[in-house]
Length: 400
Length: 181
Image (cartoon, rainbow over all chains, first blue to last red; front, side, top):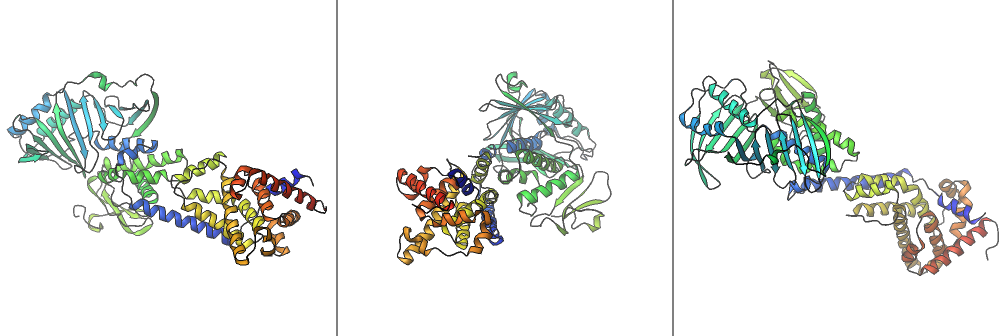
């Protein structure tokens, strides 16, 4: 036998481990996995937004969630049945500034102040220039053409996001005026006088208008009569707009939809409005399997989703699937989230999935009444859905 | 390094323990063969492979410049050495006397483990002095460079080359039915 033949024989030496060794090693790996997951759940992220931007999937997902959450934040959407009486003079006076404005600049917060990122919007015509606290990109949202241009100066990257099914909004400020006019023209329109309240060291005077699905509070500077803060509750989501300034001079170049020279261009599509119950159920399943270790999340509200975004990011990063599969999964998750963001049912929805295990067929986790329906839809822990009447709901929708 | 190994290490460094399962599945046969060849003891060899992967899982970050297979082979060799050192301490012997204190795996076990066609080779490897056996196995089977083996054995590269040459020559003689020089 020649040395090369011996070497070849040695190279090919293999021993099949017995089942016990395989089991021992696999158990060790399972334990390590369990420990890592436990540690991850216990960890708190110091600056979620910086971490979030490290993943291309998360960047897209988070941008989409934030855009979806507040893109129509100032659209005082009239859901049809506003039942208040006549406008008061003070309300008229304050909203007249909105009616006369050509541009607007404001900071937007989803949920409670201090708990989420601050989004800064500059508005001119149908376009919004949006920057988000601790995120390097600037986005220009062109509502007339249902498109977003997201610019990353550091990476010289421009991403065009086409907003599928976005209603035609020719001019953002005009739209706002239309909504206010519609609100004021509605039979029974009234406003509630909230008196003085201090915000960030400034004393403001407030008015509140309430509709079936909408509640708008405008806080104005008593010295100038200018509206400087809006609080809007839309469905079960609260949006705060503060530091509002109207008619601020703004350069048109800030709202350009042309990618700067030398930027790498990418294109994506985002469907904000087409989510169905099936999308929501698919989203619940992904949330439980990927994020909740087999349990449903504590909450499905937009505020909660934005708050747990770092955990979503980490869990998705650790998935052992290809980037393409990860993106596809992320898109499904987004569609599920959109169902809640643009909830089309009647009245409120109820989520009771906290601590419920995926597959639990005895526990109802979500119920709502679809638009135009007399009966309710109840989703169970095994993701089966049943139609039921109001007396048979797990608990009444308006009670906590 | 193979692309797949790079991806597996990248995933491991991002906290994906599942990548270790893939690494185990990929290299378990070769690592166990190396451990059995070094230790001449199946149970001890299985313990070594298990311990290598348990230690691997405890790493916080893994920065590898060479091959993954070579790294794992080094881990197996180190663990095997530890077992042998423990036996030496117990028996007050040296590495050169290791043959006399290695476990005696029965002939029928060799067939089960390696298959008949490789029995002669296995016997021949086990007949080598431990240091020569280690040098030959780590270089040929583990794909390790002589410099890395020298570092592991804490000797000069020339000594490793010498051990390797002597070991290979003895294997050749043994397998060809010659009387070793």
